[in-house]
Length: 112
Image (cartoon, rainbow, N blue to C red; front, side, top):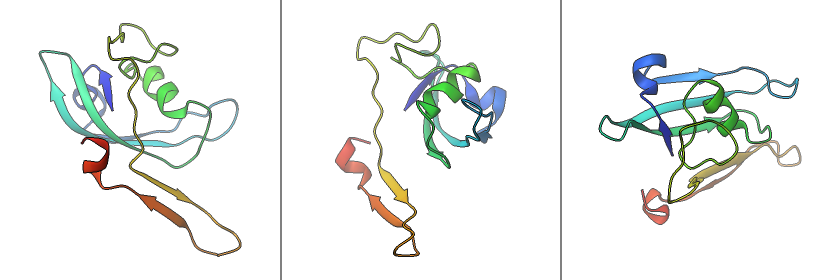
């Protein structure tokens, strides 16, 4: 995903955003994949530890780096392409199996 601004310069090349959302714990981890100075955009890989409503978009906008094309959170992040997010992997805890259930896509399948 892409965000507006140089998150790496201000918060580091990787980090953790953990302010609560809606009174509940919320943890978003990010890693900078690329910085485009001409476009003022950072490309990130993101992993969430919790699943709050619009968690990634809210955490990044609150940190000052709104997701590009997000019409709801942040400012100065309009994009003709609109909001473009893709999940390449999901992991769920499964009490019956007593082990996580994981789903992974090859990054090439989603155009990365």
